[in-house]
Length: 361
Ligand SMILES: *Cc1c(COP(=O)(O)O)cnc(C)c1O
Image (tube, rainbow, N blue to C red):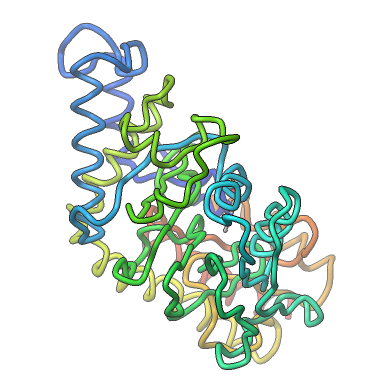
């Protein structure tokens, strides 16, 4: 079956091996005569899936008993609200807002009545950078610092996470694309549909000392990280099939050599596209101020005009490279190169970029 290269920002490509395993399991799980999506979440079969997913997730991230692994619903967007609801505790909360997602997270905290301090923003320069950490205006006794480690829309990343006693990371668009320094992280979370699996599932890794901050009253139990951890994310019916696919992705990541191996491969993939941009003599223009902050997951660039941009997207699609159009409010081109995008797809796009420039430049 011919597969195209799908550069969508999410839901995005999944590895073929994972899809094949998931397709088999959907029809008949381990020769049991039922599919994985048709079986009770209270069954021993599904419990084994959850246990293995938690164990493999911890092994990939190199964590032991310090953190819990949660499978939640409502998207990363729901956590934008449930995080301050549980962890603000009446104190000021600090947010880095250097892109659409960081800004949205901060707005959701304000919406539920938290006192929000924006430590840094780059909105006045079109969210093209993260200002240097020395210039961030941190609140000395903030309940936490929330950062988005990869701004999906604009295409920049935090090369190194800051140090903070309660660091919360929205890693939606780069979760497990590289090792995460878990010893610095109180909570890391992301919608699965970017880098890890199908939509409808949020992976959240929570440091256990956060539980004591969760208010005893006024918070629906379903939102409580502690209650979810105690019931292995099964207070109610979890997205069983999505969790199963996530488990297959964890197995696949291990076969690839783990997160350090993924980081090397993802850096090489991104380098191919950035090289095509930088070698174009200005035909393609990157959108990020400092090349060191360029995302390895979402590569953003512009062509000389709208007409060429549209033609680029259309001709690439005709050659089997899909979904290269930039985010609706931003325009230009965005190529998302998540874990499942093969090196070959990036080679093909880089070659297409050079060939397109020769014809149209
Ligand atoms: C996509 C995205 C979100 C929103 O995820 P949903 O699962 O759609 O709620 C949040 N943060 C980042 C960084 C994203 O890329």
